[in-house]
View: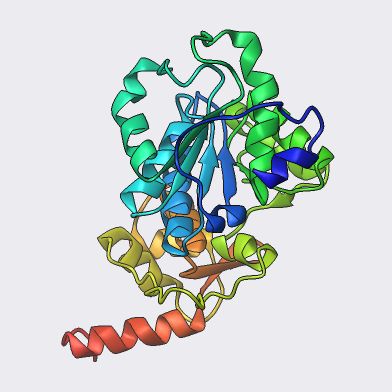
Length: 291
């Protein structure tokens, strides 16, 4: 790939299984820890599926945890994904990803700069991260501890002049120590999928594909969407209205923000996205649910 010709330590040769297409130049890397939380798992899956819906290739490293979830999410949404390996293409690592690699080959590619027969030695993975970031238009770190390999990928991305996003998390969560540090160091905080689309210079309505707006279908999301309404409301008020624990409300609202359903404002307040609210009310009235 042309992009890899211009990175530091550009590989002399690339081994490929599958295929690369022109649209892969818009690829976005999603990386993170193997020790993910439920929060990280949900956001990774939602984000990968949403990017796939816009025809954006998801790039990751096939590792356990966030990487595997990102590949799976893209494929489940009918998208393309590229896995960059730290071993030869003839070796499947981790072994439980055998079926996943078969799907990737059919809907994307496996890539490695290690010769056939190279085992998955731990020292192989940090250098391979330069290829993940090198192939991508930008890098998103979902969750990462302070010593996570995902931070190495973010470092390579910065060296290569790529944009880096990090998902903010609780300051007490070990899985968010690295991402919060990245934000402190200047990475973009990922607050919604629109943040990524804006930097890709893509509009919410793709010129190449008609994308249906994601209206609430999950009962919990629908309940929260109605509670949020047109005026900003504090998360505590929303929690009281729907009679759900604050942690559950916060995590669900974070996912809804990624979907573009709600917007977070100053002071932990949320408001429904106006055109989404209009569409939702129209649909409810058609279904006989409105007043």
